[in-house]
Amino acid sequence: MTRQWTGPEVAAIAERLVPGSVDRSTPVACYLRPEKLVEAMGALQAAGETDFVHLTNLCGVDFWDHFEVVYHVQSFVQNAIACIKADVLDRERPALPSVCPVWRGAWMQECETYDLFGIRFEGHPNLHRILLWDGYPGWPLRKDFLSMPGGLQPGLDEFSGTKRRLPPPVKVVE
Amino acid sequence: MSGLIKSEPFTLNIGPQHPSTHGVFRIKVKVDGERIVDAEMVMGYLHRAMEKLAEERTYTQNIPFTDRTDYLASMSNNLGYVLAVEKLAGINVPERGNAIRVIMAELQRIASHCMAVGAFTNDTGAWQTPVMWCFRERERVLDLFEMTSGARLTCNYMRIGGVAFDLPKEFEPATRRLLADLPGFIDEIEGLLVGNEIFLARTRGVGALSAETATNFSLSGPMLRGSGIAWDIRKADPYCGYEKYDFQIPIGYQGDAFDRFIVRLEEMRQSVKIVQQALDALPGGPHSTQVPLALRPPAGEAYARVEGPRGELGYYVVSDEGPSPYRFHIRPPSFINLSALKEMTVGGTVADAIVVLGSIDIVVGEIDR
Image (cartoon, rainbow over all chains, first blue to last red; front, side):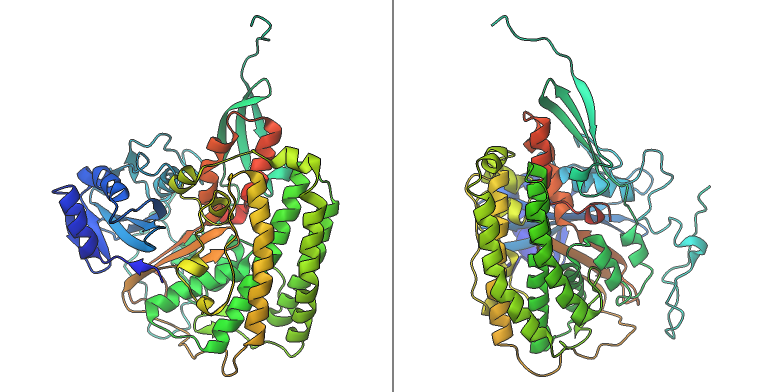
């Protein structure tokens, strides 16, 4: 069975390897500070005790007031997986350092996150809209992006007590 | 040497409509003479915003979406998604449900690898005969799916808490007949291709990746195992009771297109073994647990992964206690396996690029989502 690193365990090691890199930790995830992100990720990849050689999954989540970028990293030798996150607080100009120097394979997933959330990954070798075309209006996976045409939630009406999750600040895309 | 012929870089489009791209996918290659000096991928022709759509549908309504990402492995996709939701909501699946899931996932792997192997040999120039043989066996697997779920390609068979229907009576004898024939078919394909001089010349040493490069590029599945890393989620992080079955992880040594091909062939043999064991020890009892239709998992997040035919197929689901996922993210294996395409093609010839692309075994529905 793959061992799941808890947030505090990863945080303790990251803080020891790169002092000042940890923002906070929850039972699930360790939150790294953006300015030390690449350094800390590199240290966690190189350190024998963590050995996070494989970046499995990278994606963004929009929480209305901030974004989170989620990294799932794992070690083959130790058979362990960890969840590391970074907060992106600036909604107007969201940016985060790119982890491509650490894992070269991150470039496509970062492009995808940029494409759908508009988070710029600084230091990325070739950041571009990978799925949508250049000049597409808006960032579709943001919560304030136009939802379904007409803002409906098909299929949800039949369940009693379901409401829209949040008041829809619908943005009309011309 | 003064006899070098001067040439200038020339841009060549492979795709979007090209038989070797297995869908609508385009590579802009810059060639100098016959050699590729740069390769740029253009994708998104099939983008359907599934992750956005899924945020507005209930957890159960999202299962058919997962069929349509990787349409060659809908059972595996169903499985990955329902596992993520079950992890999030803490739902247990009855033993029979788990065994049926394993049978379906392994049959799906056989069907998908048949397609991968057949299309790959097509790309190398073994025109039509191997692919027809592969399709012949794949059809029989799809017949089993039709018998069980009513659909051949987009099965929509897994449910949160189990599977949609129990196996029909005629499933077991039909599957046993297929399992009896499959090893002979795999030997046949292997005998046809592995000793073939042209096939070896086209695949040996093409698109080779070292174990370190493959790891650093986040590759998974046959791509990673072809490079010599014995990493299989079914062994490393067993789900649905895979720890009960006896099977091995085939690996390659050179990480080239040939090794990926041979790993796929061997995986089909292992899948046959797994299905046999699962059928022999098929437990009785219910195939599913009762789960409320409007499921509201507790707030939190879950990342569940399965070993799909193309690699690690992960689903990251975030819940805010609502009836639909707050965030629904797919980790598509063939999308991420493509990240090393430039690494593998630059320096080779255009003909090799086709072979490399075939060896990745891309499914464009999954890349673009």
